[in-house]
Length: 261
Image (cartoon, rainbow, N blue to C red; front, side):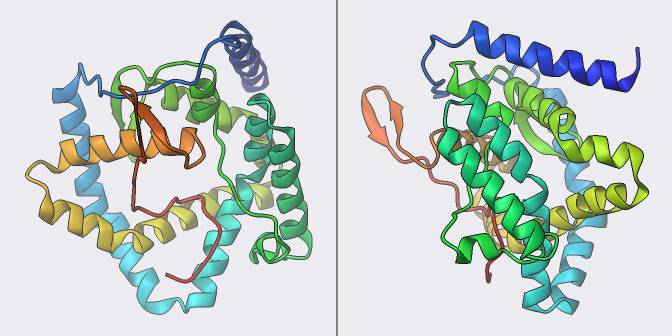
């Protein structure tokens, strides 16, 4: 079975899940299920070592040498690569207006914005909103499942890990990268650049969390759950035991449009 067949089957399976869950309510993940915590902590520590040795130095070097307009362009370019997926997931969630907005952002920023290096769409009044397949599954009531710490990617859960894989397989840039070295360079380079930019922008928050937490692993796990609850509802309130509470997460969204730090 070739890669294209695997992609087609994965997308078909994802659509089947949506059909099966269409009558349910959005998932509300009020607790964390962490049955493989010892393994997760090992991966968490390995990720921390990789961050200390590679990502943190790269982010600090980037922060020192890149002027703010360059940082904004890197972030905008990385965000633009995700707009097709934002549009597809908005459509899956029954929000055609947002799907059109994401497509408009992609077209405007890819053309007038010079391949996405400039976030012209926001200046034109088309705001950015990130949508991923993990959010789509949650929209149809699929629970988070067990908490997972992924190598390199970090905090996740079974639902969101499924979303990461599905989004990768559905992204047209993934197909383009298979057939063009230039697209591959831009696609994967944008992903790496976006990760470095996000690490730089979030450095103060990360260091503050490390210093203020008795257990950094547990604090990060809790914040990840709060963040996902918030984005699933597009920043809206999370209903918990009959109360309305806002889930807060101060870290920058790695996929958010460019702006001054």
